[in-house]
Length: 192
Image (cartoon, rainbow, N blue to C red; front, top):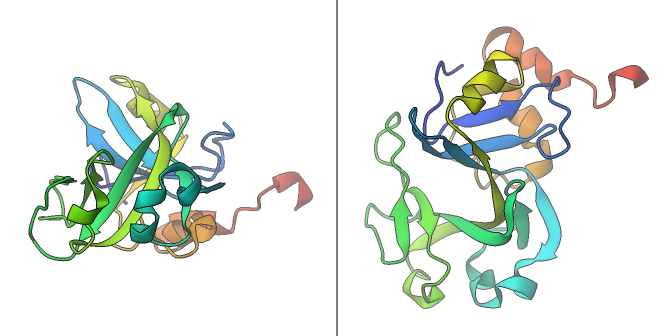
């Protein structure tokens, strides 16, 4: 398990976190500043809204499922996209996530105001998120201390997991020690 919050890391909701915005969520950290705050996107919540109905020109580049993901409760009327580039290049319209832990990342954010054609041959995977999750200075650290989140390392396939609804269990199962057992925690403990 990771010991600190860092860009590129994951926040995994503990079973104690019952806020409907984050229950059983997996959040990819996109920005973190000890003196500022933290910004991330929930990567395991596909919505029922097709990309075609909102951003039709980007639909051909989206990695399935071709729907908007619920990125978090903040600014849900805005969209943010993440994409993996095929090479080490930094194409126009794409900004690398500087993780600081795992070396050079091929994952970055996409400028959805850019023409999709300039990225079409450069990216291998892409997802679009409506909204994001945000915490003010010290807020997330407080939630972690209260037992609301596990902080774990991400793996390359997490952001574009083919079965997003199973990502919470998948991430927990691969953790060392007792944390792996949390993956089998029932959805409703009263039904156990």
